Image 1 (cartoon, rainbow, N blue to C red):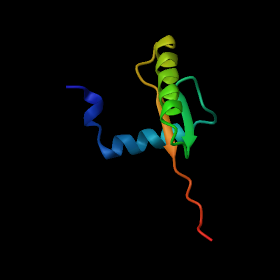
Image 2: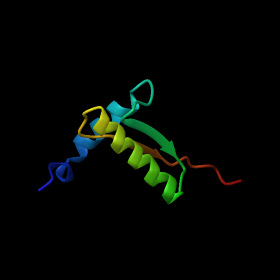
Image 3: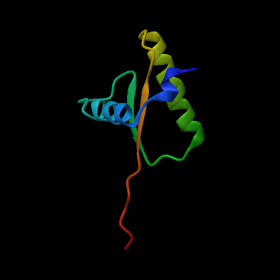
Image 4: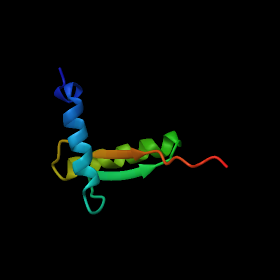
Length: 72
């Protein structure tokens, strides 16, 4: 079984905090928000996967945020 499936909430929360503490995006970490374009999301994931492979890394991360706007 793939060990990445069995991550605890504490592990994932810690990882998220490490990623958002980075000063900038990297070749294996990107931050995006409010995008619902499936094709563009697929391109991001493909690019991150390729970058991770070229850098010899096992993982890449796409951190997604939803920005809530106040209703007027």
